[in-house]
Image 1 (cartoon, one colour):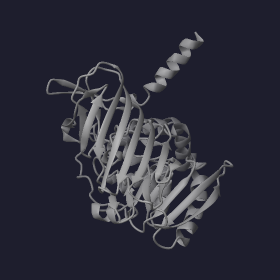
Image 2: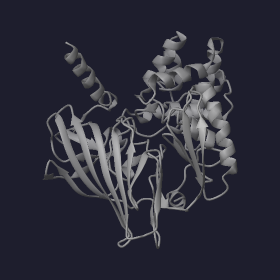
Image 3: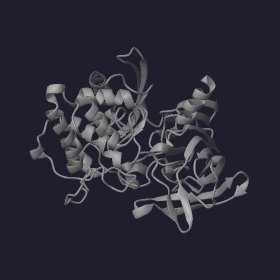
Image 4: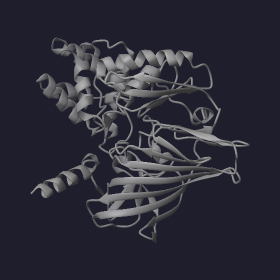
Length: 442
């Protein structure tokens, strides 16, 4: 009986990710199905002699129903092999044309498979005379802008162990990697990078560069739980203000939301823009607080789909405003969580309407301690677990003992309401950078 219970627990854990996947769908006489990736191992090579970069990826995945499995990769693949058979990944539109994915051109029975994919790596790669700079910059505001830009992965609902082997050929110039993974130097200009099992397609921070490319400084931050957390800050400019601001923000966030969720902090003070990763960020000085709170909400508790992405941006933007309180007079209808179930991006209304909704909840439940104690518990209960908006709502209702269906239907799901178009502006702390601007930050 004990062995059987252990088996059931293992199976429940193995299928946990797939439970948050969008539903399968029919397309041109085939069933398109979402899978559970177990591991991803990628060999990333930069060759200065040919000025080419490539990625060879091995993916172990489990499929629970018959059909053609979904992955995603926007880079150009040159080889796709499943169990020794040469196949192809075909671009396929998700229902309602919400996004595009890659679907394997072979119907598979339920089971565990090993897929090998080789692709070119051209995005955010700059070859120098004696070295190379490369980064896996990402965005949650534009479609297909997570790790799928660089190597084959799954959609954001899925979590899996990832390992990179990184090699720079054709130069004696020493290189280094700034990342939120664990780096081991195998040989000169050859590295192994290991990432935790809970990482998703939006988690990884990866920045390769010749040694000495940036000013940098490190210190140890003593967390409230007793851990000594290494903090690394690097920038082309001065570091003093980034250091000072980081030492202010980390204690503030821990006082409100508990121990910092990750085992290290990496900050690239790029001077513009802002994007969050697990325990890491590329940021301007003014956006630093906004990006670091995302290590709790977005890359601590993680949205499983685009319809849940509003939560973390609303929380971060509410903090940016000084945790202001609002009444229903300040709210307006939206469908931040009412888009297609296949949507993969965050609704920009999160920065404004979402932030005001958080302030409304804080005011509504002020007699019960307000919203921040709930958010701390929400983070503790669901840390490193992809969540849906319905789960955020149900946790709120359980915590405060009140039905919030009416409020969520009106202001979050847009049920039965005439709605304004989605906003196209950006949070001033979180501006969208062009491809050229991102390339210049290498």
